[in-house]
Length: 151
Length: 402
Image (cartoon, rainbow over all chains, first blue to last red; front, side, top):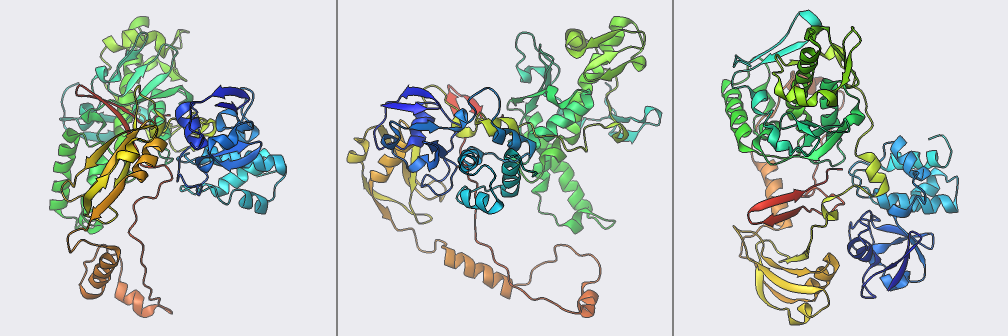
């Protein structure tokens, strides 16, 4: 089947019900998107589908056909870092790093919808992105920084 | 270097720490340069460090980075002693060898109480056991990351390995220019002589491995520029671009995946199963029975093209589980045993400081509380995994060196 991922058209030999996560990781070798819980509860597998954050571990790949999929590998279109990625480095956000791809994709969707989000908006948008290292406070700071506000 | 008695003292001149050894714990852990697998253009000095053609200092990394910052911390130790910027350090997954064992981790595990170890009344037995254990641990190659032991373990070992490289490079420069080592200075990986000559480490690397480094001196803390600072973590950039390689991200050729199903009750096993339909599913390849091993819970695994295929097929296997033998612990039983133990038995004093009874009497207010925590393993978000390739007895291991 034909998929549009990070601005490219890619072919994948997948069953229609195969979750997008596994198509990305195993068939297309895009391993930046992570498998955390596998039941859509932790957010580690978050990618953007037509701009909106979705849980790729429970999204059948057939539902992604014909729509733009963006993964962490495509967060920045150029060779330069996305402002969120730079802010993430400046604030030294990740610890183990396993949830961070999902966090960044959810944060990117938030900033597009709300360029200057409040703490409450950030908390709401990322409420279902679990970080077992508990980086939440720095995630919030980094989003403010990326939004051009003082952290 | 001559074998001398263990000595760790500050030399008055130059403010340096002179370290010498008998059966030297540090020298025995500096290791052979063959462990670094130097490729064309690279020069390996010992089991921890090689210099690359582009000027990078490649450091063997035997510990796992889990966000605790140890890759950066050990890199800082090497950069400090070598007088190079932290950005010069590149990490390489360490080989398997006893020099990389985590001796401090093993010592942490000894069940002595603080009172046994510290203070004027410390037990000779505890000290003796730790000494013997440290010697044994150096031979045993117990390579673990945990217990806040990485820096404690690497603190002298990595610095010594780096200081030995620096000393060899200085000796090579002194020989090349026919000047005393004492007249040389190092800044940012460049050796300079006041007479005007200068050379980068990489220019001297080939000569340096051939010379004796002489006395290895660790920097005195008053000369530290990196240790003690808050350096940006080396692993972070790759973790924000999705390029960091976690255990499940490696793709050795021909890789298949196994999904497990274990008996839901501790100590239980498979009574019977039917897997024909499951194994006929796309992407499913074979079923492997996992018998009880030394009392472990039994079950089975399905191997498939991807983990999703394997997992889907494993779920489709029809299985009857056999009841575990009577007396197997369950959550309720474990809890009641623990509660009984606290209530009924007399414990031991773990640590004591000051006069507790006196403090208790004088307190305006006392609190009496009961705390309980569930019996949980580390609930990491990343599923526990490790990728290893076993071929004709050789094991190639991939871990999260990022």
